[in-house]
Image 1: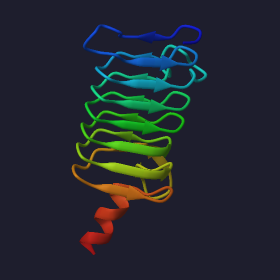
Image 2: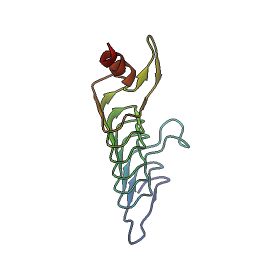
Image 3: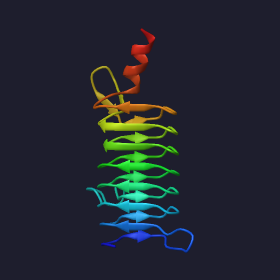
Length: 136
């Protein structure tokens, strides 16, 4: 429902898409949101089975994944992100907060979070900071 939405409504799939360019292609998936500045790459997408994408450009691309917030991209099965923006590639991992990912000593370089069975909570956390703390 909405401009440019796509939902897979085969009898087995029963997915739903609401908003501008939202795409729900996974079995029993839900995409609710709008396209970001670049509609080609930042549409709200729920392509994993039982995936939930909610927010502008939120993407839940793996089975049982949850992406809530602007610009999150969840590729890890059974993983989720709440806040913005974070990319999660690890399985069974969750992020809650904003701008979490990998940072260099003085600069933000990437929003990727690829740890398995892990969690990051708060803002501007990084796995690099955690590894330095554990190593000292």
